[in-house]
Image (cartoon, rainbow, N blue to C red; front, side, top):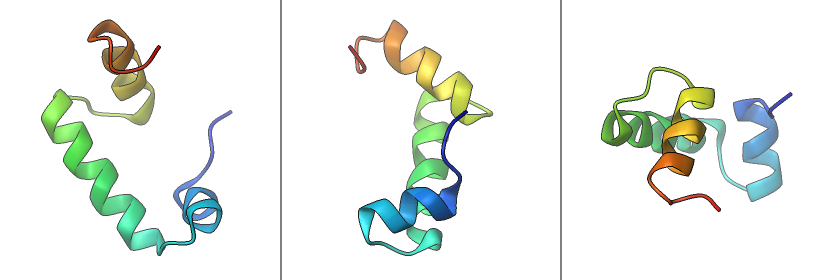
Length: 49
């Protein structure tokens, strides 16, 4: 299982809103609807090893 927005925010020492904003912008750029889809696309594009 992946981390929640709150858990990610705590680990990165940022607000949950910051995580939501960055995630949303990333999803838009990748044309992804969900975090799992964004990861799959990131791997396909060579952005994630």
